[in-house]
Length: 101
Image (cartoon, rainbow, N blue to C red):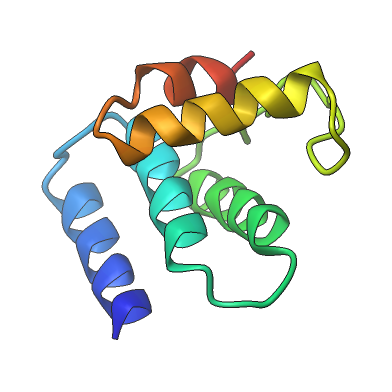
């Protein structure tokens, strides 16, 4: 149900230009990670899906910290996780900055 709701919400955001495309994809990513549909690989999956969404809208894919390794513990991953935590609290600015950094 949560996945269907997310896809319905995302379609609404696109159809009604609720947010700019980058914000739609970033919110989609955050919500998909939060739903956590798999035991492992949810971050990788949601990043891939956000990029697929952007490409379907004719937009360039996110850079996700300029190719920094987001799976292993490092400074780039720490920034990514901090941005996701802020988005969990409703502040998407760090995530929007990170996805194009």
